[in-house]
Image (cartoon, rainbow, N blue to C red; front, side):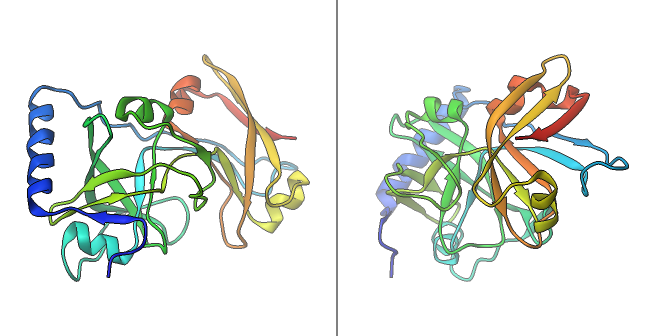
Length: 238
């Protein structure tokens, strides 16, 4: 059974898309892969209970078990490439290719694990422009009135009718962190980044979970704007 809002493609359609992907690759029509960036401010006496870590969340995909099998074959499971900062989360070895409405493609989009109960693609604003998708700014899991995209895997392809977003920048916080900053789940903070390309990001949404480690996620465009790797100091404030 195929989930509501998903169209599977027949072999002829898949072969046509694959041919177009190969042509564009040969012409050099795909954007360069996003770099991973990370910065941290060490914990200090009298300061926050946990060190502030800021990570660039490059383009990626979350997937349901059902869609994973469509893309990679029956019985497929995600295989771990490396652990991510939050315990239990990982970058998998599985990669897919996105095909936008302009028939432009972005290859090598990594699936993050573990599998979820929804399929979602997270892109930067620049990625959306390139593919021809008007990306809404959303918190993960909010797919109301969101666009879709065609996804190619080694075993098959599917077209989502929704689930493609630009992730709203956010801070993962536990109860201890929220108490220190005086916020609750859903509140907004400012992220101040000092350095050669220093910038202040407004409206960093607080996302609560009792077991997370303090971590801020910004997207690739935001990481480029502040040149995160050159940051000399970072701070969250109301």
